[in-house]
Length: 415
Image 1: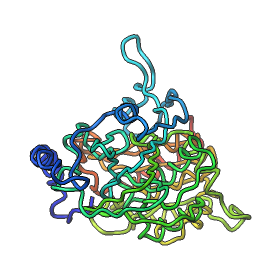
Image 2 (image 1 turned 180 degrees about the horizontal axis):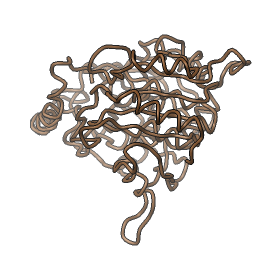
Image 3 (image 1 turned 45 degrees about the vertical axis):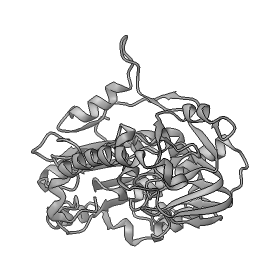
């Protein structure tokens, strides 16, 4: 997502190349890993953390948390009706005689004596040079041999930290608001469930951005912060790595409820001066998933009492307060809509997508808070056209079509 715009159409090719190179380089780098000692890349991996703990007893301990629970999804209205992706995800939560229903996985915290955490994607390795793949997931990577930790010959410079170190680092948390909220901050709830009252001396978590520091403060993190970096490794006397219940972008109801409880609106938020109808803008820069006809649509939205906001121009607390008071939200797909987490149950949400890319991460949040959610997908494409195809394509939908859908939503047409 940080590629120059001219290279973004080549993203699927680059992703395949990335996987191929990690397999090739990983094979070579694992051969020379033993002579490199603690700086060498992992020699092997486990798919499940329970196997990591079983392989190094006394060094790795798995602390269980919430049990696995069924994931329930209700039908969703939108245009085009019964869009295949929404239907496929909903049907996957209904068990059949031959296929079990999709579930929210059980949570846990992995405790590793002498554990190491590598890169800005937070790859977890043990003293026995085992990559714990379950806590080290990466976008589009399902085989541990394709993990980006194998793109470098070593784990890089190692910084040792005395005491207990907590990891809140995983893929996407270095520069994306949604992933930082759900894949970093929400994992604090896993630590609280699995190790109640646990104290830690440092936290490995991205904190360069203002919103990251603000979210950490609001969540009550007051320990020393260590910035994860590409090509570098942090080791600890005792490393704690909570599982990521949102690794499949499900916005688990327990995580959503914890965020709503921990990150509270300020006293008096939602008062008479709070805007009730929000339009979330993504600006005017091409290929950023902006809504192309925004200038044409805006006068009609203004007549309907909408306020245009760019969430990134507000503090996190101000964003929480704005969304807490919202009754209707219109937005092209984007991380700013993650703040619907803090909206009241029943809030009306209309999310717009390009025809080439439909992503259900924010819809999942709306399901968890019982929002009256609807989608609007532009013509062209099939919603998802290969790995990450069209994920930054702009949204072009005739304003009349947007207004028809919006007016129906506001009028309270049948859910």
